[in-house]
Image (cartoon, rainbow, N blue to C red; front, side, top):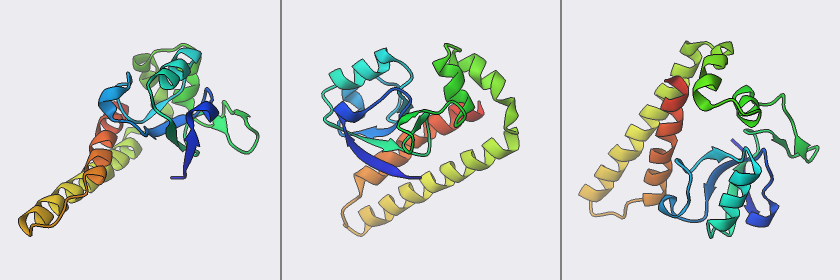
Length: 149
C-alpha cells in the first residue's frame, strides 16, 4: 500500500482516500476509506473541514504517473463511477473468486485481533495504547466485509 499525504485542494475525482485528517464523525462518508467517485464526493471532502488527506495511490482510478483517471485499474471503482450502485457492482465483481476475497478478509480480521490483543496487553501493563492503530484497524473492517458480502 502506497499512501501519499496531500492537501485537500490537490484531491481529484478518481482518487482513493485512505483517511482524512479529521475524525470519522466529522465527515459525511460511511467509512474513513473511500473512492472520490463524483464531483459531489469531492465537494463533500472539501466542505468537511479536512485540510489534508492520505491517498492510497494503488487504489482508485487516478493514475499518479499520467495525472489522469485510469479506468483499467479497479473494476468496482470503474462501475461506481459509471453510475452502477454498490450492490450491482458487487454482482459484477465475479471476476475475482470469492476465495481470494476471503483471504483478504481473513487477513484483515486477524490483523485487527492482533491490534486489539496488543492494546489489552499494553493496558494491563499500564502502558499507553496506540489509539490511531486501533481506529485504523476498525475502519478497515467494514470495507473488507462489504467487499466479501
